[in-house]
Length: 298
Image 1 (cartoon, rainbow, N blue to C red):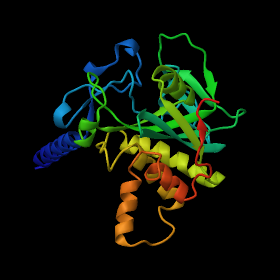
Image 2 (image 1 turned 120 degrees about the vertical axis):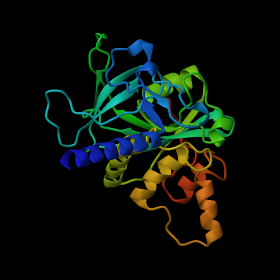
Image 3 (image 1 turned 180 degrees about the horizontal axis):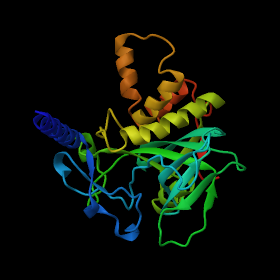
Image 4 (image 1 turned 180 degrees about the vertical axis):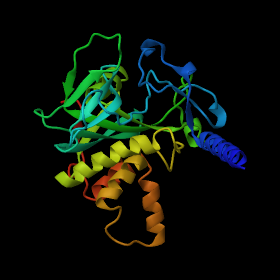
């Protein structure tokens, strides 16, 4: 009887694990490893597990999921969080983030198609309490580096063999990935290489709100990255940021008629910087004061 019960429990657990596995939008796959970092144990290679690109590799040379990790041989430090797969200078690092001392938070707008923007957050830290970076590549003889920022960027992740396009984004063929990278990486890739215009705006947040926003952003990396579908008009870079901000400062200050409330939900998903769209939502909610902002390159 015990053996039968044990077998039943084992079969049920196996079926449950299989069902949960089937629900994952990206699954581990060693076949999808990025060749240039074959020895990187934190890479997390995987493949898309749904839709038109089912079985296609995620490009982990460019897009990786960061996870909170423990530093080997060291006890956890209060006010510090260590993330894997922090992209800086075209390489991946473990980053020790001083979460208790956020100096400033900015929202960035990168114009990748005329009139259409990618939206992301930049957390800045004091120079005397920097983000400490250690190389993830065992073969690399690189000394630890320091920087003073963390960019959180939610993006639709195309397959390794393809490029992002609005058609696939509209038909929900991509998982959404939330990347951790540096401001310097944004400048080197988006500004210097792609020649995109990038404007940044300071967010009007208290010290406590900035810290809470950072904690929520780090949690979202592990909970949502590669586990929800990218939807061009309802679950994109802009809505991902507003979902975090709304948790901290509240989405609305007044109760509006249903048609205005519906329009608000639509407008917050439009990554544009004109009289409508994401930037206007930031301005109307007094989340930023300067409507012009400034270039990300000082």
